[in-house]
Length: 168
Image (cartoon, rainbow, N blue to C red):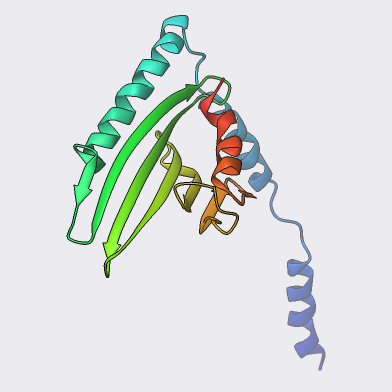
């Protein structure tokens, strides 16, 4: 019986040991390496060039996706436009795409508006609005109205939530 308990006691003692100290040393040497990867401060000229680079990237993105800004099918016509803004506080180039979609399915005309706010460099979608063109009717709630984690109930609310991104 003691022969059976001996290996179990030894195994239990080994499992209760702390990990080797070398793991802690590896973690300590990794931290300075990450600090070295921090971006160098930008020169004044580079900072001044950022809005122009934002405009260039936005125009290229729009041309790739929309070419002339319109697309027409048998049932639908879409007209797109964009605005861009380099937000110096957030150090981000924002691209606001607006698509007006007019559909004529079954003889009934309907129009919807889709707005999307992107970080053009990271490709991250910050907000989206999909709803009616106007907010005249109280029953005209959008299907989608979201900016980051905040929901909204109208196009006007969406515009208010987007404003801080598109202004300095």
